Image (cartoon, rainbow, N blue to C red; front, side, top):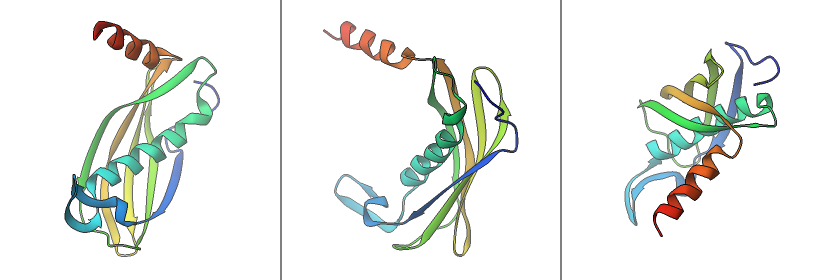
Length: 134
């Protein structure tokens, strides 16, 4: 990693809840509310955005773990602000504490771990799998 990424650095992603973010499995709508799966997606997204400017040319990142507690619902059209704050940095990973809030307060909180890898590591592993499956 390059630059000065440090513990306490943060980034914010703001979204508006849309129907494609609703809790559903296949074609079955479970609740017309912001889904846990969408919250995970947005938590990973903001954590990755925070990290990207600090990767060197020969590095890439990959999501390695997500811990999430979905606390409250968020309805269609509500504004959600997802904030990631760096809590730990090593040569091989960055961990962020992530909080999701809407107009009524905290709706989710958790942690995202991003692994730092040599560039093309993921593609090499995928290519390897494809060769084994032939």
